[in-house]
Image (cartoon, rainbow, N blue to C red):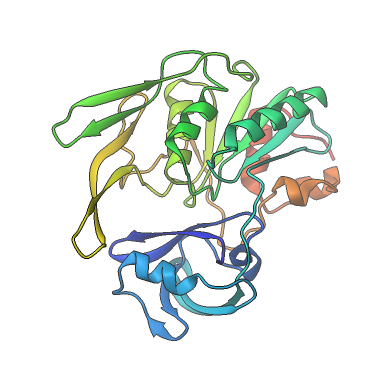
Length: 304
């Protein structure tokens, strides 16, 4: 495929987030782009599964998307060569001139916790005294991984709550034994942060564990249950919804950051894969004001 999480917003298909290192990211697809056409066919009234199926295809083949970028009120035609999607879940880098590690979690896949633990241990071994946890453009993933990842940073209490249609709530407690419960940290979020990323960021706020910087998140938090139909298809119904540890609604609300700092569409974000060879001067001159704000909050902004 193209390597992007796709959802629906206001009845329109939308890019929730492209995956790190994916063909979609390389082609310039951005979180928030509305999908208008796939290979010259208008898909704005199609079911989501049909849109996804039309975008997927064999590795090496091309698909053309017509995307509307709302902030620019302009549409774009983007040709993408499909590929096999194999993106590392957790990566990290020491930011130049600092003792702060930028840790990037790109999705909450089955190996997210294991890769995150490895990244944090390596960062600490290299002298990290602070962490910037980056879940920008992280479209989420497995609930189990949201719980395990959050539990690396919080000692006790709840990670989230789950409410059904009758208002009955179930809590999901922190799992003790986290490896980074006392290191100073900042969490970065944006519009492309969804689902498990919102659970994580919300928990960091509710536990006063970290300052959350960036833009209000996507606002997904519905548990979908399939009801099989006689013709082999299935009806997906939202039967429950996720709430933050303190009971704040995520669905259609998102997580609002403690420090609101919006970036223009097209801003080149500092990810570990791009930051390995940065100099202090290049870091300070970066367009990524959210990372620089995080360093400021950690009292670790380097001098030029």
